[in-house]
Length: 283
Length: 283
Image 1: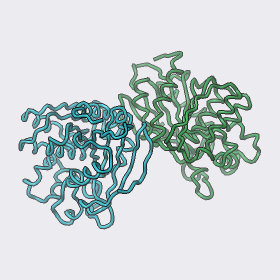
Image 2 (image 1 turned 135 degrees about the horizontal axis):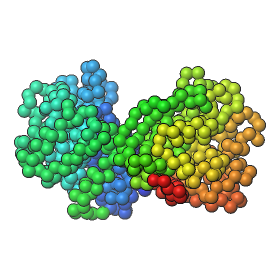
Image 3 (image 1 turned 90 degrees about the vertical axis):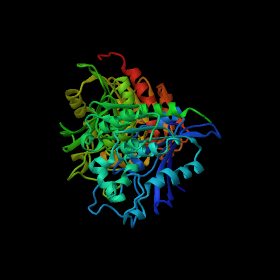
Image 4 (image 1 turned 120 degrees about the horizontal axis):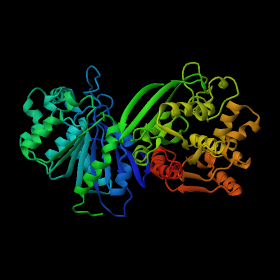
């Protein structure tokens, strides 16, 4: 693991790191904020998965998470959203919603994407091992959140590993990838036409198929232009109600899909995560 | 005035605006955050002047000021750092420390810069009039802060208009432009060789020449690579001590010159400003 940069911030260290990923076959860059902590302490880890077009940098610069992570003693990890580099396949038309910056947190099975687009393995397996090895992380206390495509990632990964993540939340997530254009394009392109394979990468389908978590927290901007076509929080509401999953879903009047929205509600999410990560404190 | 964008954030509105400036003879872009407020209220205004290479966007995206401005009821204004556009003269070598992005908050007298580089008039006269006209601003309660070159701007403007600004503070400011390479290049290029003309644009010289403010707040990263050559807080310390100006200058161990530093101490500065802006509240 190579250190790209470190900056003192809010008493801790905001770092950016790069490593050769076995999962994706490319170099991968990610950011980690480590708050101030006692020597030898192990701190809970909040995973943040980003949305379409983003890298680790968007939330790192605009997320307004550090002050509260410092106060609450949370490590904050932000991976990239796809493999990148020479030879990595992209959307044939260069579209923003598939290929580079749009890995959708799946392991692709379709050529040419299967070669590098293995973001599921990267985020659920390879990067956690690296975080555990290189940072003062208590891997028994992890939680996950994300935005838009990253909200989809947080929900599907959180629902798939209910024992690993003590809290799962999302900002304006794609809740039912199989049912919306962004998701249909991505899942078709990465996983092929067999829609049975899609269900593990669709939060609503996972819930319908029996996945359970203790609770979900979702904030959604009411002025988000993607709300009705791509995000569909109503579908998550219906699935959670049917499954008996307590969902705190709040429509935020006037808020859009941007980091101005995310940063506004970041503190609420971090506090919600911290409450659920307290159990088993080793700090 | 044209609205470039508005985003709901922390209960208020983060806007970006553009207007044809008479002072600079160019279009100028700036950002304004207006916190949530009661209908008809007039709110105090915090001016933030940015550093070399920056536009309004850097602090707007990375400054982490909105949550507290919302809590304290402060309007936050971030101008650009120079005129821009076709025909605007730049550094002959395209250097980052002169010309575009490096207006140094002076009215240039030297060709070819005198035509457009009139940031002093823009920031102290034209833009305040626009803010007063277009936003719910209480212009009897203004304060000013800035970073690096913008810290130089905040100090020199604050010292020049002690009745206007109820608080003056800076992050890693250039405190003695006449005595450091960045400042000497800029003042020489914009104002010419007569160093008498430089003194009004040098905070330490202004204090030596009798300018007074009730107090100054300065934070400086100890790991800032520009500290010794360009920033020289020791010179401000000496000038303030000699003049009897209470200066709260804190060297912050491990912090550099970046927005990770600024955003860490932004809350301290905003609270300090808010304390001094309370008098005469019309909110």
